Length: 294
Image 1: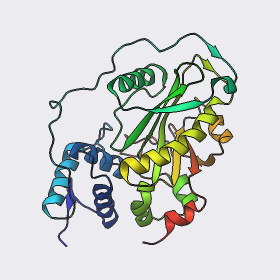
Image 2: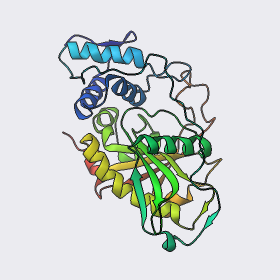
Image 3: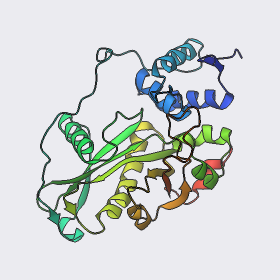
């Protein structure tokens, strides 16, 4: 088979296999979204940390011309250079909410699908989450956390998205080599945003929401993308948070990242900002299923 090159480098077999699997499983994504997802998973970034989306999209179209993958039809989008902005708006509630969890039940996760919900979600994340709002790469699901005991009250936000391409602690815990990781990575989802609004002070709410979220997102992700997730991951900055809610929800601490960050292409920031890796198996035999041969 003729070599396929990306930015002058020949694609490795596992990289090609991952791209083929992504194109097959996420056929509903636009070409731009699929290119962003590939860049995220294969860590194809410029020195400034921005993904090589344009080059990756060209690669995908060459692979389509070669008959290796199928792509979604071209569809109109916003003009090149258009930016996503987060409009200013009031929080749904700012008065302190101090209450036992039982008085707010049932807690509900509202899937973010309408323009109004998207605006609210982005506003709250930009205003209250340390990482702010960023356009996610490819496949993702977002939720508003609501208390519905009396009238719907927004308590926070959640986002699940594509996993990290390489995490030493996670990969060792699973027992992955490079080829197996490339083949099975899409069965992992990342809890990339979790926010309880600062005025909400409800004991045990965070761990309760995490348990509810994993049950909900497993169903929703399978329906939306045709892939059943087997493992959830998240990264917690230990200089900001203890990760106690993940511990209380029975997530597994598998160590720290190297702290390089995706923008460190020259390996100069080792240990600069390590994050703690937490995992949650969504099936009992997760390691066996993530390492089995096809």
